[in-house]
Length: 101
Image (cartoon, rainbow, N blue to C red; front, top):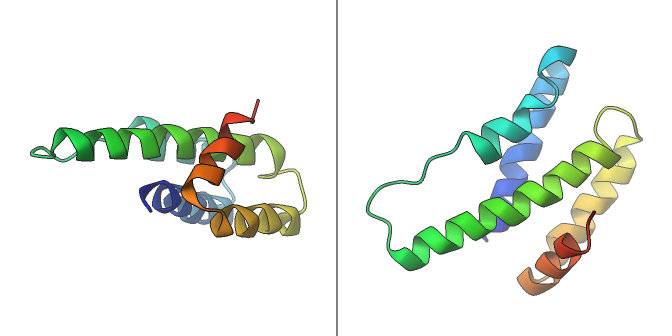
């Protein structure tokens, strides 16, 4: 669930940035969501690991969205990819992400 939430957060932020029309900030959404984040103190080691893993895998997936769809492709193609991704079980999502270049 955390992995999908990170992807959703990125898509929402990227959509807001795209609507502003400021080309200078187009790629900042990825950094904002995946690099400039902090974990709440007091998390258990298991929770910390889960959130770090979600951040890593979602970041890799969203980087591929930036590379392949955002700003230069048909938004319908990205929407199809996102719907396909959303329907996958967690292990299939991770497998798909691990296959990305």
